[in-house]
Image (cartoon, rainbow, N blue to C red; front, side, top):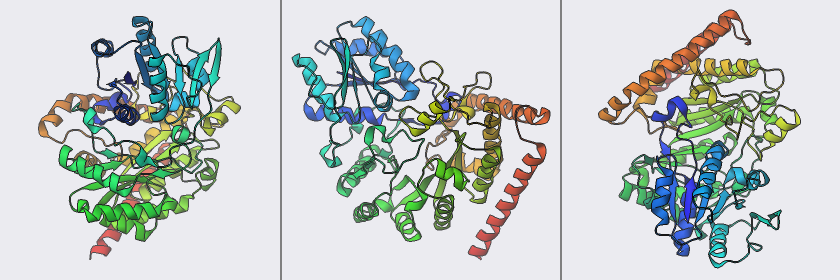
Length: 524
């Protein structure tokens, strides 16, 4: 069996050379399950593999027919997966094509409708994949495989879902040893699955469910020690959707980290909600080696916070950020523009809040209605869903990463707004926040901090190699920001004015002065 992570190589467009390539975690979990079951499985990651078909031809020489090609698919990689799988079916007509992951789980009928795709695994795939493999190899039917969608007698069959695995320690350890490419950043750990919250824009829980489950502290810290000793990792990102759902497990984990002395030689990054933290917990986390925290702030509007069903308030998030900064955390955050009911003023309030809070890094994303989310249903009901091709425009960071000469249409624009207005507001937000020497210096000097690090090179030779790409990126960004000022000047499709832009920069200057005075008074 060959597992394939289908991903366009230019997914991050002009920023592609400066962001790490993350290991396809879903594929890794499936590889581990195959190893545990004694099944020979290879994998191909299109993020790093330039000649996928040649690699397949090499692997199938050691495999027995029928070949099974199992694709792990996100919405952003759906077009690539369909194209690659169709080519594999043409080259190997007797092969079995299997799709799984978030997008196939959310839209199984859409996926299985392609003639060359034989089956879809919905939900977590470790156990169904092993059963599917054995049934294919033994010529048995699929009627008993939980979470499987397949074709039978000219009809589409959806088998019932099984109960989720409660104890994550029942799964085998993650197989870091399989990901040998030097392009990967192995400094990550997945310590939990599931999220009990109801955010309308989130697609992550489509496969993992709402029930929060976590691994034992011992297994997590064993993995941290292995990353330190075997792979020389000194900073590790916890890629959990929400790291602090259970305070009990968090304290147990901190105790184990301290017990083994890892808090003195490693640092950790994590993602959390504002309503899950308090000063004591944050202090204890910091003392245990946690140094960077990421908050999904989403909006500065309490009304919009209710609309997106975050289950927390802006005030709680603001308090959480201020406590984190006071303790010494590097704080990153995301705001989402283009939410239902949003206005230009709401977006500008996000810029103001990002500066008032003195965030270290921030992203301003555009809302993307991924299949399976409530936002998708809202976009459909409002007749505002825009799908280009096979979801080729479903990209939440498209405004900033796109080539200015080849713009990516938004997948959703709320009533009362225009796509161009929101695009200009996103660009202005980035400009106001990052046109600051200290912030830019921090990004270039500390690639180990934050989530989704910008890395221009930790070694001098790596930096020199990226200089041409830096100049190209700088030129394209200059064109984007030039367009912003042009649109503002001629008043085309935007509510922006030079007076408002000047006001935002002045407010940022005043906020920085106030923050510096507080720091000065605190250290005096």
